[in-house]
Image (cartoon, rainbow, N blue to C red; front, side):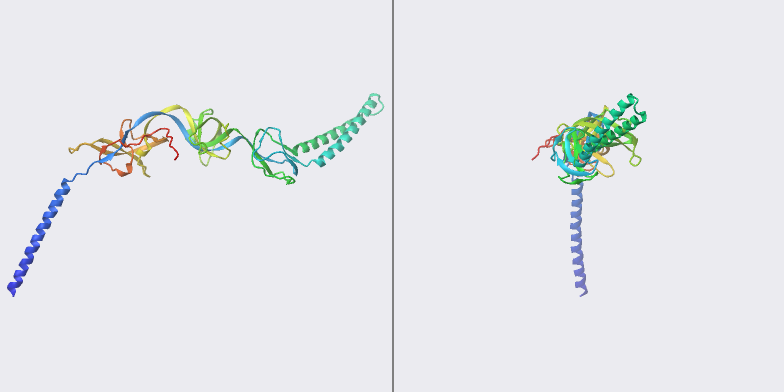
Length: 374
C-alpha cells in the first residue's frame, strides 16, 4: 500500500516538473519576442514654421452707435391730429412728422393779434401827441410797454404751436411708429426712432497698457457676422481722457462709412486697431498646436540622436501663441522659423515617438480661407 502511494506521488511530481518546464520555455519565448519587437514609426504630416510681417493690431469687441440718432418725443403734451410719416420712411431735416392739436393756441393767437393791432394804433396816436407836446412822455412809455408785452405773448404762443408741430431734426431713416391718430401724447411718450446711418460710430475699450500706442486717426478694421467675409475700414475719431477705474480700460470711438446701411446701432462687432509699425512673427497652422490648460505646445520633427537610433522623432515644445489669422496662428515664443512641426492630429502623438513624414494628404493652409457653403 505504501509503495503504491509513493509511486503515485512520484508520477505527480514528474508531471508537474514537465508542465513547469513547458511553461518556462513559453515565458522565455515571449520575453525574447518582446525584446525583439519594434514599434513601427507613426506617419505624420508636417510643415515648416515660416516668418511673416504682420500689422501690429490691438483687438476688442465693440458696439455700433449712430453718428446722429434720437428717439423722437413730444416736448409738450397734446392730442395727435395728423401723422405725416410711415414706419421705415426716409425723411429730410425739417420734415413734419406729427401735428398735435393747436386749435386753442391758434384761437388765442388770433385774439392777441387783434389786441396787438389795437395797441399798435394806440401807440402811434400817443407818439404823435407826444411830438405835439399834448400828452406826457409817461403815457407813451406805458403804451410802448403794453405793446411789447402783447408781442411777447404772441411769440410764446407761436413757440408752443411750433413745439406741437414735431419735425425731423436731421436727415435719416425712421423706425417703427409708436403712436396712433387721436392719441393723447405725453411729453415722454415715444413717437419713433430716427437714425442717420450713412456713417456710424463704433465704441470699444482697450486695456490701459495698450492705450499709449494708440492715437486718434489710427486705422480701425471692423468685422461682423452681419458682414461675412468683409472688412470695413474707418479711423479712430476719439479717445476718452479718463480710464475706467473698475476695469482699467479706456473707451475709444471710431467712425466708419456705412453707405449700404448694413451696420445698425446696437450691433456688436470685432474691432482691430492697426498701428503704423509691423512685426515679424513666426507662423504655423493653428491645427499644429496641442492646446492645454497649463500651456500650449507643438511637436517638432527632428533627427533621432543617441543609442544608435536612426530616423525622425518628435520633441514636444511649449510655445506662447499670439494673434490668429485665417488658418495660421503666430508664435510669440518657443519656435524659430524653419523648424518642422507636425501640422495635424497632434493629440495622437507623444514626446520621443518615432515618425516618418508623409505630406501627400496634408491639407492646404491659407491666411485668408474662403470655404464654400454647401
